[in-house]
Image (cartoon, rainbow, N blue to C red):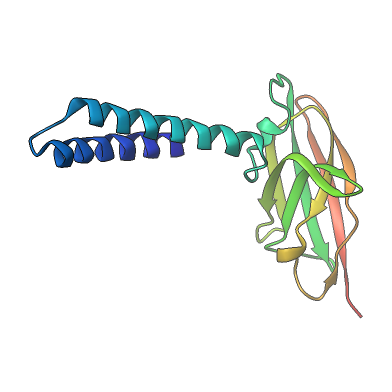
Amino acid sequence: MESIFYFIAGSAFGYWLGMRAAGHPVNWKKALLAFLIAAVVAFGITYLRGTSGGGPVVPSALKPGATEFGSLRVTVLALGQPVEGVEVDVGTMTSSGPTGAMTVATTGADGVALFEQVPVGTFDIFWNLNVFPKGYQQPSGFPVTIVKNQTTAKTVTLTPVR
C-alpha cells in the first residue's frame, strides 16, 4: 500500500517539478526523472520494510512459501477470568530475543487471541513487555506446534504480582 502512495506522490511531484522548471505545462524530461526517482524510492522502502523486520506480519507470512496452514487460539486468564488487551506475539524466540518475522494479536473481552492461516510448524508464543498488563508477572514464552487444518489451543494463566 505504501508503494502506491509513493507512486502517486512521485507522479504529482514530477508533474509539479516539470511545470515549475519549464514555466509551461510540462517539461517531460524532468517530470519523468522525478517520477522514476519516486518509483525507485517507493519500491526500495517496500523492499527494506519487508526484509528488515519492519513490524508484525500476517500469520501466513511467518514462513514465506508455506502451503499448509492451521490456526492458533490463545486464551489468557487471571484469577479464573479472561484478561482483555494482552498482546500475544507468535514467531521465533532465541536467547537474545525475537528473530525473523512475527505476528501479533490482542486478546478480546473473552481473553482470546486468534491467529488464522498460521503455517504448519513450530513457533514460539511470547509477550511484549511494553504493553503487558500491570499487576501480573510476565509468563515465560513457550513453543507451540501448528497442525494442518486444525486449531491448536493454548491457555495461559497470569499470576498476580505480590
